Image (cartoon, rainbow, N blue to C red; front, top):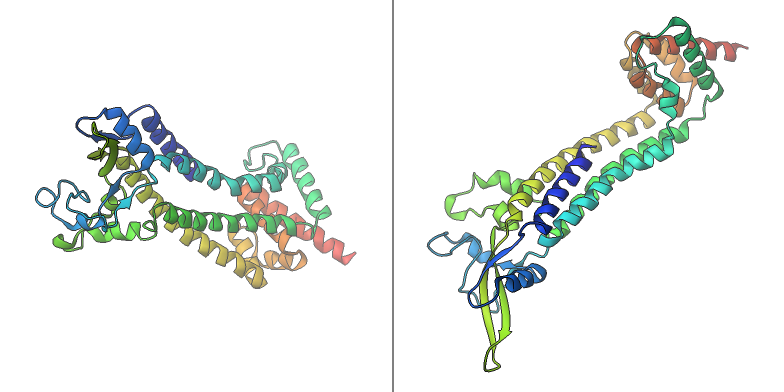
Length: 331
């Protein structure tokens, strides 16, 4: 939810600046400014990687901007610049996809089962009636919730895949510079002054170069070398450094969560303690007995109910459900 809103907000800010303001401003003599701006916008600007290590103000005018380069020197082109707003928008859609799939799979079942019992303030008759409906459902659908649990875990796994794929494609988008972006930012202050290359400026330069060719009066081809200011990169660098740290944290937490889910599936003996942890008022012995008589899907439904129901009502539901299941087995 947060990531989706963050991506949309950043996309809107960058789009507004890009299509309402001036996303690029080039300095050039003897040519219409808007022509050069448009050309450099659509053809992409560049820097010289070797020039980032030179001293600004003495050897170069700006980081990465140098004039003494040959045709053999490989420039670094910034082809991503005009596409950032669209990429952020599609990332917002990608972040919403697992939630959309889960809502489609779940169909509002948990909300229906809870029936407002997440708040314990209601009339006794109303509470008993809702508890009765809930217990009847649970009894009638014993051992029918495996698909529900599997779909939930698949959506959690999709969240992890989503994050990893986005990291991979962002790395492609930024020409292989994104994977190590956050680490380089953290190590920047510890690097020796003479060896420092600001990773944020390297990936998101404020000033770049652009070469515009035109025919002169005699028909010869003239080369116009211009400096271009990329104001959106001030926003881009901060947007993506946050994304890098947030995605690394998300990937780590989701990996731990997936490992935890695997342990739940592989080691059934841990399930009663997990169920007991949702409500300490439910005796561990009752959780053990109940877990043995239901399958994994039913156990998962009970665990989810523990998250959504009022603790007192949940304890009553678990106690009555255990008695009903025991009674059915005895009969």
